[in-house]
Length: 281
Image 1 (cartoon, one colour):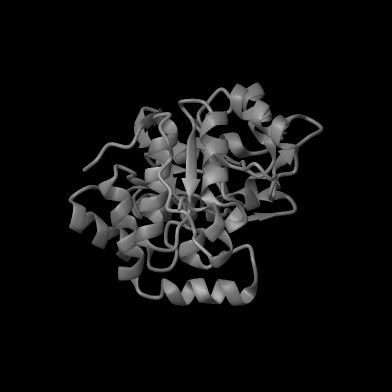
Image 2 (cartoon, rainbow, N blue to C red):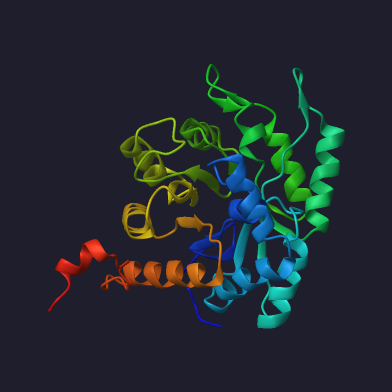
């Protein structure tokens, strides 16, 4: 197996590239028709395993998302058997809550499920984390107890968030987390704060940051997207990518390695009739 550059999160070795799962599960951030197309494309776990295998062979041995999402567990096992390497699971579960706060009996059940599914890192999803962010007191309500419960189940706690202030508040209060998920891309897609402000927060985070949506759900081409993120995050930070095919996964890996090694990025230009004039005679 090749060795993609690595970092450490809570003592656990991780590749600096992480496999995202939105494209596997049909979350295109585009249209319902596109969502349906993606779901059909990955309707067979073997199709998903083919993509995971390419990443695994390059040393990208971590996948992030909904731990028991469609076909993920089956595809993970197929890819692991093919390569002979474990795929590290980073879970982002939703947690039950009411207007009064978290429902801890249900939280315990959800965390138990994720631990049994083999999650090594557990990062409550943005859909619950950001509900608990209290700007008035600059803390994430009830999350200290959740982090304790995650630790008790042998998983490393982190936070998934779409709010940059979550990182600041968690750092200020010394919350027991080892990493953060943060949206980060050059066009500001889904980001509530300007790109330069978000970059500043990531640069000053006390723990490694897993950046997500670098290609803005397909709205940015990989060349622009990856040159930006790899060159504006720290050596301990990570980039999460989603792809639709094994060939696309390999392209993303090769491009990222070239950027990280400061070499000319490999790229096969897209030829059309209108570009004929730009070719050497």
